[in-house]
Image: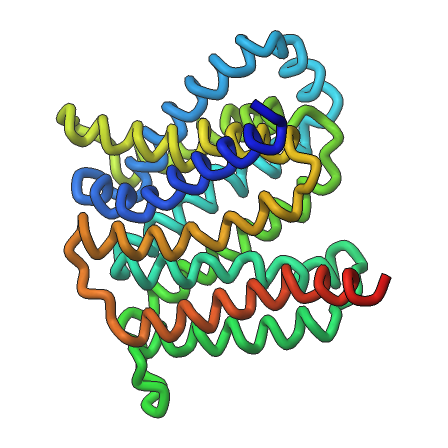
Length: 299
């Protein structure tokens, strides 16, 4: 099997697994409160990442990377998993899965905008146009298609999901400064974030009992949202000779996710979700693909 084929297999498997997590979030939140779900999922992810790091012979890197930059990992651990997943799960708890999923995908549009003040990057015209198009889609979804009334069904849920995109972007901006092993860095963030998750859960939403169905749902989220899928995606990027071709696979995720939400959760997918998601995906494709096309046509 060629490296290109292997890279696509890794990438497609990651995309397929990520496509299931919006549905998994809603199912798991039927058993847990948001903080409880973060706790179970983070514990599962730590176990999975720990096994992977051990198998790769990178255990010694954990202490080395932590000693070199303890404050860095403290900050990343606070952002992800603690704040990001708590805020994201609160959003999923308040909103239909189709809305939370679609709005969460705007983080990729927000990232280059935040990179301007935080990294000193320049905002291109393409980034600006893509942001306008994508956030027009956000408005359509948030208002349920009633764009003239400026009335949100769940303003708190909308605020949570859009806040989660800010937190996720901050996490990735900070990670541009990370020179350590990516999987070890993620494991360190989760190890350091776990005490914050645990304390918050025990103070506000302690787990009193847990069924095997609940445990399975929480572990699924930990494995296929936080841990294993991230490793598969890294393997795809490392194996391929053309990273751009692999990254375009991400555009499949929201489409597949909406289909699973309709089939498994039995949510009626509204016209406003279809329209808004089309706006968001158009903005993403414009941002990611147009610069490449322009570069190809103007060598």
